[in-house]
Image (cartoon, rainbow, N blue to C red; front, side, top):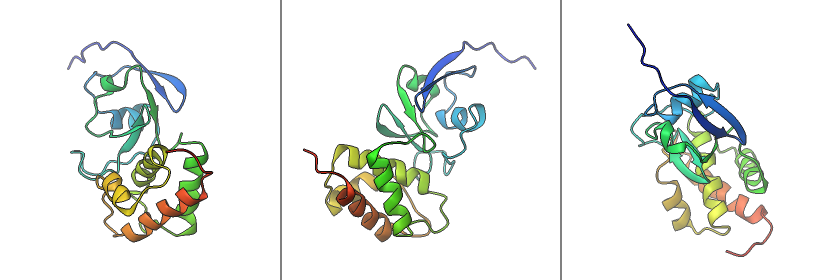
Length: 162
């Protein structure tokens, strides 16, 4: 069986350039996990219903399972392996302090969505949190701890204008 030739695709992943040779419609999830060896972004459903595959593309949380790699060309892709900064540290610290993960499978997507929320809104209400996190499912039902951890992370951040 002949494999069609594909043009190399240039990406920026976690601040570093990467070139991949895959079809342009290959889901970003598979490029990250299989081609680039970044397994922190999880496969959950394949239809953008669970949030386990959430990554940031130019700072916006997106479901990598349904995002074609071509949609990320010329943009900055951040995975759980590359998340950095005060907000990420506050979220990760609050997750650990409040023992948010149970099985942990969904947590990389949960953290990515929480960081995006706090980058956009430094003092979210419960309703803001619920709205921002609605695309992330947790089979273990740790939603109350997730909400509490987001509030704790927000409180840990230096004051900044909203």
